[in-house]
Length: 227
Image (cartoon, rainbow, N blue to C red; front, side):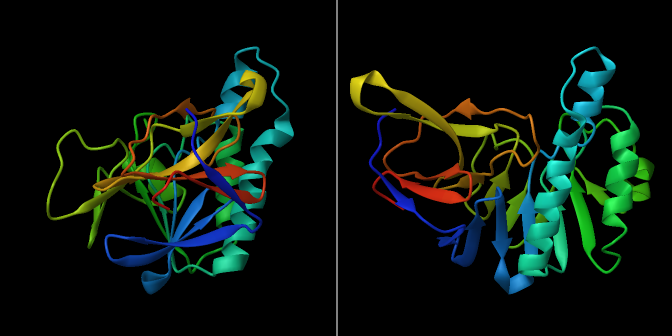
C-alpha cells in the first residue's frame, strides 16, 4: 500500500465524524469533546499474564504501559466517560485484572462502560467488579459503539468499532516498507487502533474515500487524499 502522507509533529489532530468534532490522540484514543467521552478499544487486560502463564516470557512491565497511557490520557482530557469498544480483557481473571482494578479505583467519578468484544468472556458481574457497565452494543447518538465492524450498513447511525487492530503499510524507496497502527475513518464506520500492549495489527486496504491516520510513537501521519 503506497499512500501520500504528511507527518504531523503533534500528538493530536481534530477531525469531523458524522457531523461531530472529534480528536484523535497518538496514544490510540479518540475523544468526543461535546460529551467529554474518551473512546479506546482492545485493551486486552490480562494478555501479558496469560502468555506468561503459558510459558511465553513477555516482560511483566509491558502490561503497565496501558496504565501509564491511560493515566496520561485522563490527565490530558479529564473525561467524564470512558468507553472501551470491546476486548477490555483478554482471558480469564489473573493478577493483571487486580492491578487494573487498583488503577481504575483512582478515578471514582469517571463513568466506565465496556462494549463486549470477542475476548470478553467475563460475566457482567466481573465487569461490574472492575467498575464497568457492560453492553453488547451502545447507542450514543449519532454513534453506534460495537466491537466488530458492521456487516450491514445503517443509514441512521455511524458506527465506531475495534476488533480489527488496523495497520497501514507504507512503501518507500528500494522496496523498503513499514507497517504502522492506524485509525480508519470510513464513510459509514470508524475502526480504532488497538490500545493494549502486544496486540499487533493487521494491514487494511482503504479506498480513496476513506480517511486513515497512522501512528508512530507520539506522531500522527495523515494518509491518503481525504484527511
